[in-house]
Image (cartoon, rainbow over all chains, first blue to last red):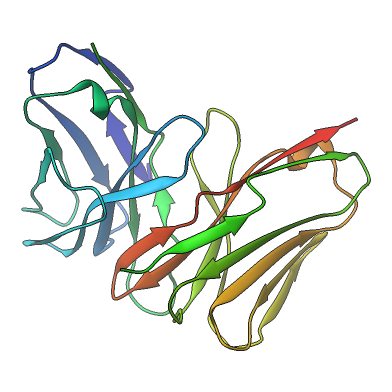
Length: 113
Length: 109
């Protein structure tokens, strides 16, 4: 199993551009998450999904959109990028049941200038 | 909404000293997880606690969940240089996950 994969690893955007961060998991997990981590800070939940077709806002959803058309994929869309969105973005997934262990992807380092 | 706070933010220790980080929630938690993130890496799951008063050990690491299920702690005995990193706690509420801001541990050899 590859686990959770994210592309791209790095990206530089100009202000006002748009992009999609890709996230795929091959563990048949129902739950998927997008976090952002600013330098020296903790993880802030942007959006999450409890299953295909279902998404919900986290703490910091403004400026982002998500979709979950399949169990495997959970792309994060940035519209009209702003310098405040410069961060490292992590995607994570977990299965159902009594385990809450989240598996994280390697992250995407995004800079908006 | 649910808030999870961690203290201290930073801890510098001499190798061989003990280390403890504390996690406090504004609401009762159904469960708590602990993660470790090495510099430049991604968070890696360490353990989960679900029962009131639960204590779990992993070699030199001891995890506790408070009786009221609103706080937790991670204690490392006799730190080693391999323990460096940031330790996060996280609570899950119906699928919505909230992370603390983490405690960054540095270990001086």
